[in-house]
Length: 152
Image (cartoon, rainbow, N blue to C red; front, side, top):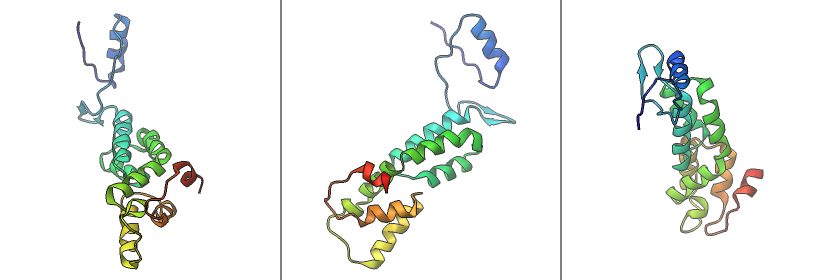
């Protein structure tokens, strides 16, 4: 068995290997740093980064900033930001769960300053204001329906 690494931007080499009967079996995001173009296959990297950040509870705005800081162009990051938007509710709930906020808190908080800090944390994590406020208003221990939250 033989593996050959060919940079995806070298289209003529990719075509040549395919003409020889080789198949593209996968891509390695950010595996090659081109001196002029930067990291190759930014779209795959962007999707991977979006999946990682939303799984850890970060929102769409945080994903977009992380991609911009990494030098991913808007075109390459478009699908990744759309994915983060689709996962907005589950990511926000994951963040609230990790921080024990809203429905994941031990008890309801009547501390206005603590509630403001919780809201600020969710906003810094990249979640929208309305979604954050809605999640934080849920009483602790109440069953959560993500679809219902998406409809709000």
